[in-house]
View 1 (cartoon, rainbow, N blue to C red):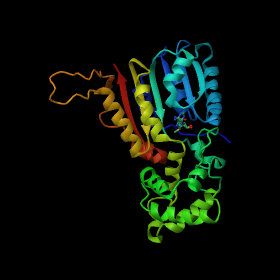
View 2: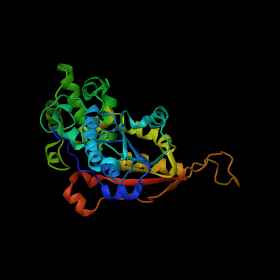
View 3: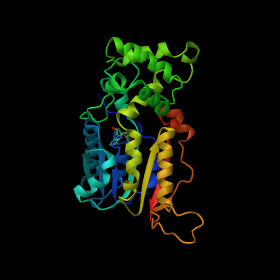
View 4: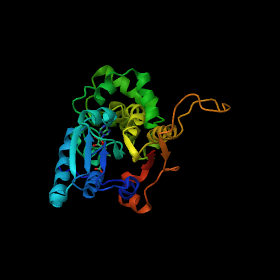
Amino acid sequence: MEFSHTPVLLKECLEALAVREDGIYADGTLGGAGHASRVLEQLSPKGLLAGIDRDGDALKAAGERLEAVRRARGEEAGRVLLIRDNFGNLPKIRAEYGLPPFDGILLDLGVSSYQLDNRERGFSYLGDAPLDMRMDRDQSLTAEIIVNEYPEERLKKILYEYGEERFAPLIVRQIALRRRDHRITSGAELVELIEAAIPAKYRQTGGHPAKRTFQALRIECNAELSVLEDSLPGIIDCLAPGGRLAVITFHSLEDRIVKNAMRTAQDPCICPKDFPVCVCGRTSRGRVVTRKPILPSLEETAANSRSKSAKLRVFEHC
Ligand SMILES: C[S@@+](CC[C@H](N)C(=O)[O-])C[C@H]1O[C@@H](n2cnc3c(N)ncnc32)[C@H](O)[C@@H]1O
């Protein structure tokens, strides 16, 4: 299967990263290397791109694409390091590979079109597939385990919070009834349960009825929000002076985490407002470049519907 993924907010990301030809860059969500290949095109042999993805299939396809860029540039080509890992481990990765601080780091969160279109991965509510949804196929937790083994209350909370699914109680009720009878193993069976749970008059609005539940299960399965929240401060500290972190989010919860982490990095002081001087000793890591997030243009959203919910935020290390 061909790895196709249209990079979102590409021009805006390249502008935000302001790539220097001898700079050191990290793409923590390499995917199809849509953004990374454009960064690599600008690097000289002194420059380096570390491409990280926790999905081995993505890494292999991205590696081929990046190699093609290198071949086309011949002796002028920049260096590439491919790493199968979680971007949450970036500080550890940097230490392990002996990398200097980065001039730019990109995170383009969520799943790629390739992962969605590749039915056997179970990310899509279209067609039938096993309930998998793991980005890292070595991980043990799958969507099937979540659907069949999580307590009802926990499942409801996940659907409410990560999917903003207002019919979460009705959907979880259907799941609970079915799993008393047998284990739910297929995406098609889950879609059928969701459709039966959502009242008929609401089934036609707000996109596919299973979209929100599938999104919620994917976020839980891959611990997407906790990885982001726990790792952003350490990722910011992997930047060189003047280095920039650019993060593209697709979900309001993700965006809030990124916004708060960048604000805290800019102004980490926790002293009471009326203290004449700071005693907590926390110093600013830099500045938020984007007071408001950068959104895709109308042209981009018309050409690529996946970009509609995208937001780009940028932080510059001091
Ligand atoms: C939206 S795609 C990136 C697409 C890429 N920017 C491009 O233009 O081709 C997100 C990728 O990040 C990977 N990913 C998501 N969360 C990750 C994490 N915590 N650590 C490493 N990779 C992650 C996914 O496996 C997926 O391949």
